[in-house]
Length: 161
Image (tube, rainbow, N blue to C red; front, side):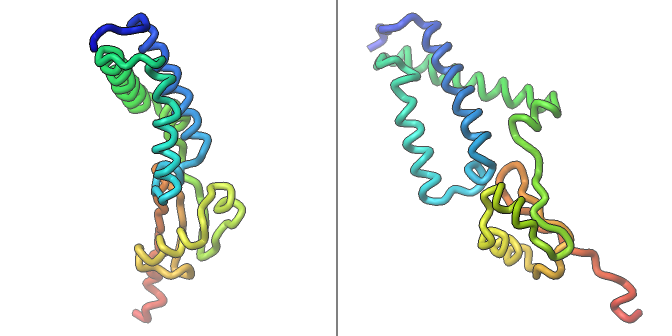
């Protein structure tokens, strides 16, 4: 139960490699993968975890090996969080930056498509912001995958005062 089939350091190396590769894969897959899960997104996450589980443990089923891998992943996550909090450049590399999807009532369809955002996603964000497209000043896809709608400021001269 506690006897490991692999040396302890190999669990740390395996955990670090899998963590870094998955972080890169998730970053490349786009911010919509992270921001809002659809049923098929959840399925991908579940299959990812299953597909790398043997790579993490090297077929070792010991409690000690599992705890070493878990501690490695948690430590790496804390290390990345601390490093991104201290370095804006690293934060932009790991988290990304907001993408401008529209301005002044116009949707930038090329940017929308390259960010893998559907028109329905933008319509939903407009609805949630209680804003019509003609009243939009900016539409951003945030680094967390959410869509931010900034409305135009009311024109004080247009109110007739």
